[in-house]
Image (cartoon, rainbow, N blue to C red; front, side):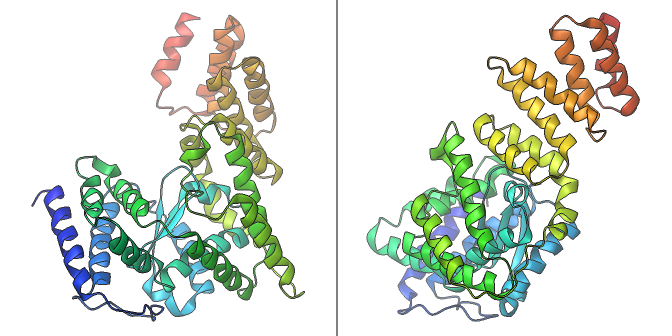
Length: 384
């Protein structure tokens, strides 16, 4: 059966299962699987199919240490449900995480790039686990089914057909558009997720810090309305104030932030993840993110290189001068990637400074003898 046909069949099953919907919705119990004749089983089958396609998409980060670390935080937050959760690290720019009703947790690399410590990550994961444990998706599905034309699910089923490796993310986004959590559900997830974070010993104040950082990014964005994470959450000011209030109400015992364990598994990926973020061409958002990462004091050479790349690509007034300074500063740290010399050479060449360009290109080839673009750089050198 073709992808569209399989999706259509799943959708028909889901709609038919609505006839077997149950009344009051209790929290899902550890290890519980819904009976096949229920609408919840239909939801699970749709998400099982999306999960299969995600595994085959090439978008899953296959790093056992990184996946094991995130799973460890999940299990610390919710040990009773640990065996029921399947963690996927999805290579996708932007801050986002989602919890499907069948127990799949998707954590985007854009989120892992931005969280500055384990406490911030724990708040987000705790929030998502509440959606799963409280069966928020099922509750939302029944509301939608009772108030909207259920054929909207055909659009979800067909959304991923014919779009290659992006299909799983397209399907998940389509389902999210139909079943986006209500603001009351988001508030409940915040409150209960905050409670599990605090109970696990994480610093409560980090939740508001993370939220305020994301707000600063959004305010600097050229297109804030495209922000997935903000689409259903309570108003920005309301959420910041509620998180501050929750933090003020916790007891005075000692809490942990745990930065080093997070960095140990994420730093090896930062170069690729920063590249992904830069490709979005949302330079205002990218610059704010760089500011926060540099304030944290890690990998200054890499961050300065990407600051130079941002200025070079943006091309606004004085950006060439700013890019040049950023590249030089990156190289001065002694920890810049070899590509900083290549970028410096290209910028010098554009400015007509051929001798400086030649020197930078030659240094690049020394630093990275096996560079994939070596033939191209050697061609440039012959032209200088």
